[in-house]
Length: 39
Image 1 (cartoon, rainbow, N blue to C red):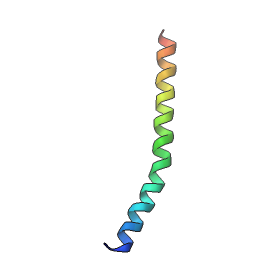
Image 2: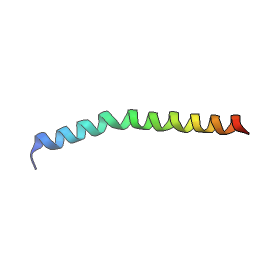
Image 3: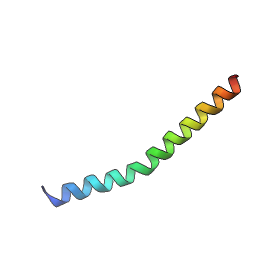
Image 4: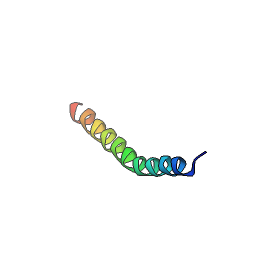
């Protein structure tokens, strides 16, 4: 296990995790808003 690869993977994971969760939450809220607006 090369330490560089594992650190790079961990760094990418931590960098992508937060924007991914925020994006999912935004899309989910927009979906709920659209559904409530249609009803």
